[in-house]
Image 1 (cartoon, rainbow, N blue to C red):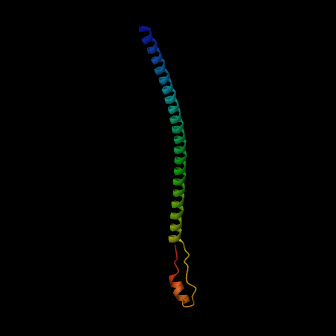
Image 2 (image 1 turned 180 degrees about the horizontal axis):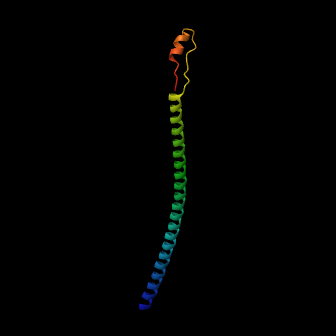
Image 3 (image 1 turned 180 degrees about the vertical axis):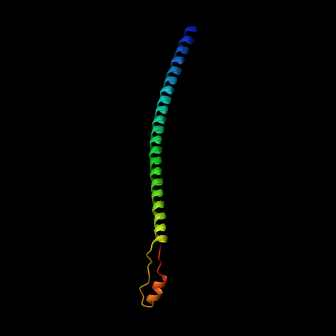
Length: 100
């Protein structure tokens, strides 16, 4: 009887060992997939950061262009006058801006 208990105990230990081995293999695979996902997310984050930096540079360029256009509009010596015949030449010459 004692021999039967020892044999059944050994069989039970083998089953537990097999189950633990399968569990360990499963956990190793899960960790591997998690690492792959983390690497993929890291690469995507890097690309997204580069895109954001590129957009910020472009926004700065556009802001600079807009400021320069506003500056040129304010300081520019040209003014668009209407071409309708109702305006007299004297009226136009009075409004012509001169910058010194």
